[in-house]
Length: 162
Image (cartoon, rainbow, N blue to C red; front, side):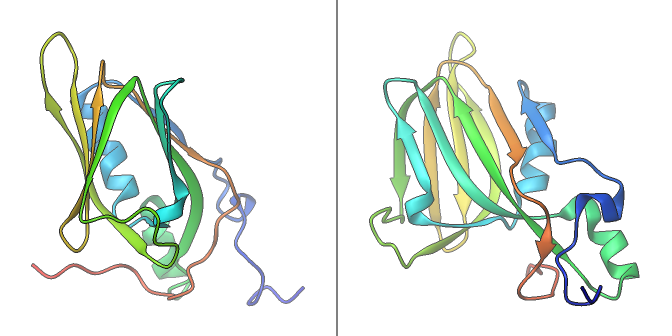
Protein backbone atom coordinates (compact mmCIF):
# COMPACT_ATOMS: atom_id res chain seq x y z
CA UNK A 1 0.00 0.00 0.00
CA UNK A 2 1.27 3.48 -0.81
CA UNK A 3 2.38 5.11 2.46
CA UNK A 4 0.92 8.47 1.46
CA UNK A 5 -2.62 7.07 1.15
CA UNK A 6 -2.84 4.62 4.04
CA UNK A 7 -4.23 5.51 7.44
CA UNK A 8 -1.79 6.29 10.20
CA UNK A 9 -1.22 3.59 12.80
CA UNK A 10 -0.28 3.54 16.46
CA UNK A 11 2.88 1.72 15.42
CA UNK A 12 3.92 4.67 13.22
CA UNK A 13 4.25 6.82 16.30
CA UNK A 14 5.25 4.05 18.70
CA UNK A 15 2.30 5.09 20.81
CA UNK A 16 -0.43 3.08 22.44
CA UNK A 17 -4.09 4.07 22.46
CA UNK A 18 -5.00 6.49 25.23
CA UNK A 19 -6.84 5.21 28.28
CA UNK A 20 -7.16 7.87 30.94
CA UNK A 21 -9.26 8.30 34.04
CA UNK A 22 -10.09 11.67 35.62
CA UNK A 23 -10.87 11.52 39.33
CA UNK A 24 -10.04 15.12 40.27
CA UNK A 25 -9.89 18.61 38.75
CA UNK A 26 -6.23 18.28 37.70
CA UNK A 27 -6.93 15.02 35.85
CA UNK A 28 -9.99 16.59 34.25
CA UNK A 29 -7.95 19.53 32.90
CA UNK A 30 -5.69 17.08 31.03
CA UNK A 31 -8.64 15.08 29.74
CA UNK A 32 -10.45 18.26 28.66
CA UNK A 33 -7.43 19.36 26.61
CA UNK A 34 -7.34 15.99 24.86
CA UNK A 35 -11.02 16.06 23.86
CA UNK A 36 -11.05 19.71 22.78
CA UNK A 37 -12.31 19.86 19.19
CA UNK A 38 -13.61 16.29 19.28
CA UNK A 39 -16.67 15.95 17.07
CA UNK A 40 -19.59 13.55 17.30
CA UNK A 41 -23.06 13.14 15.84
CA UNK A 42 -25.86 13.82 18.30
CA UNK A 43 -26.94 10.19 17.94
CA UNK A 44 -23.65 8.97 19.46
CA UNK A 45 -24.44 9.88 23.06
CA UNK A 46 -26.16 7.49 25.42
CA UNK A 47 -27.28 7.66 29.01
CA UNK A 48 -27.78 4.29 30.67
CA UNK A 49 -29.93 5.36 33.61
CA UNK A 50 -29.84 1.92 35.22
CA UNK A 51 -26.02 1.64 35.07
CA UNK A 52 -25.67 5.37 35.90
CA UNK A 53 -23.34 5.88 32.95
CA UNK A 54 -23.30 8.56 30.23
CA UNK A 55 -21.14 7.86 27.18
CA UNK A 56 -20.14 9.60 23.96
CA UNK A 57 -18.41 8.15 20.91
CA UNK A 58 -16.07 10.94 19.79
CA UNK A 59 -13.84 11.55 16.79
CA UNK A 60 -11.00 13.06 18.80
CA UNK A 61 -8.28 15.28 17.32
CA UNK A 62 -4.95 13.82 18.45
CA UNK A 63 -3.51 16.91 20.17
CA UNK A 64 -0.78 14.72 21.70
CA UNK A 65 0.49 14.06 18.17
CA UNK A 66 0.10 17.54 16.63
CA UNK A 67 3.82 18.44 16.75
CA UNK A 68 4.76 15.21 14.99
CA UNK A 69 2.01 15.80 12.43
CA UNK A 70 3.50 19.19 11.56
CA UNK A 71 6.81 17.44 10.91
CA UNK A 72 4.92 14.99 8.66
CA UNK A 73 3.76 17.95 6.59
CA UNK A 74 0.38 18.25 8.23
CA UNK A 75 -0.79 14.65 8.36
CA UNK A 76 -2.96 15.49 11.37
CA UNK A 77 -4.82 12.61 12.95
CA UNK A 78 -8.10 11.84 14.63
CA UNK A 79 -9.08 8.71 16.51
CA UNK A 80 -12.41 7.39 17.70
CA UNK A 81 -12.63 7.49 21.47
CA UNK A 82 -15.24 6.71 24.07
CA UNK A 83 -15.78 9.25 26.83
CA UNK A 84 -17.63 7.71 29.78
CA UNK A 85 -18.97 9.66 32.74
CA UNK A 86 -19.64 7.30 35.65
CA UNK A 87 -22.15 7.77 38.48
CA UNK A 88 -24.40 9.84 36.19
CA UNK A 89 -27.63 10.57 38.02
CA UNK A 90 -29.18 13.06 35.58
CA UNK A 91 -28.34 14.44 32.12
CA UNK A 92 -29.49 17.81 30.81
CA UNK A 93 -28.78 19.40 27.45
CA UNK A 94 -29.01 22.92 26.14
CA UNK A 95 -28.90 23.79 22.45
CA UNK A 96 -28.62 20.09 21.53
CA UNK A 97 -31.19 17.94 19.72
CA UNK A 98 -29.95 14.36 20.16
CA UNK A 99 -32.67 13.09 17.82
CA UNK A 100 -31.27 15.09 14.88
CA UNK A 101 -29.16 12.49 13.09
CA UNK A 102 -27.54 15.15 10.90
CA UNK A 103 -26.24 17.35 13.70
CA UNK A 104 -22.51 17.18 14.41
CA UNK A 105 -21.40 18.57 17.77
CA UNK A 106 -17.94 19.79 18.72
CA UNK A 107 -16.53 19.71 22.25
CA UNK A 108 -14.83 22.90 23.47
CA UNK A 109 -14.18 21.85 27.07
CA UNK A 110 -15.09 19.53 29.93
CA UNK A 111 -15.34 21.08 33.39
CA UNK A 112 -16.62 20.17 36.84
CA UNK A 113 -18.92 22.25 39.03
CA UNK A 114 -18.50 20.94 42.56
CA UNK A 115 -21.58 20.30 44.67
CA UNK A 116 -21.69 18.71 48.10
CA UNK A 117 -20.08 15.51 49.37
CA UNK A 118 -17.89 15.04 46.26
CA UNK A 119 -20.78 15.24 43.85
CA UNK A 120 -21.53 17.94 41.33
CA UNK A 121 -21.92 18.49 37.61
CA UNK A 122 -19.71 17.55 34.67
CA UNK A 123 -20.28 20.16 31.96
CA UNK A 124 -19.36 19.57 28.33
CA UNK A 125 -19.35 22.95 26.60
CA UNK A 126 -20.03 22.61 22.88
CA UNK A 127 -19.40 24.93 19.96
CA UNK A 128 -22.43 26.99 19.00
CA UNK A 129 -23.59 27.65 22.58
CA UNK A 130 -24.60 24.04 23.28
CA UNK A 131 -23.91 22.21 26.52
CA UNK A 132 -24.38 18.85 28.18
CA UNK A 133 -24.61 18.89 31.98
CA UNK A 134 -24.33 15.58 33.83
CA UNK A 135 -25.10 15.43 37.53
CA UNK A 136 -22.72 12.97 39.17
CA UNK A 137 -22.33 11.45 42.59
CA UNK A 138 -18.54 11.66 42.24
CA UNK A 139 -16.10 12.77 39.54
CA UNK A 140 -15.07 9.75 37.49
CA UNK A 141 -14.55 10.07 33.75
CA UNK A 142 -12.79 7.61 31.45
CA UNK A 143 -11.40 8.44 27.99
CA UNK A 144 -10.41 5.46 25.88
CA UNK A 145 -9.27 5.33 22.25
CA UNK A 146 -11.13 2.53 20.49
CA UNK A 147 -9.81 2.66 16.91
CA UNK A 148 -6.52 3.23 15.19
CA UNK A 149 -5.73 6.85 14.35
CA UNK A 150 -6.70 8.02 10.90
CA UNK A 151 -5.70 11.03 8.85
CA UNK A 152 -8.09 13.88 9.68
CA UNK A 153 -10.46 14.42 6.74
CA UNK A 154 -9.81 18.18 6.88
CA UNK A 155 -6.04 17.56 6.97
CA UNK A 156 -5.91 20.64 9.22
CA UNK A 157 -5.40 21.45 12.87
CA UNK A 158 -8.49 22.97 14.50
CA UNK A 159 -8.20 26.72 14.98
CA UNK A 160 -9.93 29.00 17.45
CA UNK A 161 -10.62 32.72 17.18
CA UNK A 162 -9.17 34.59 20.15
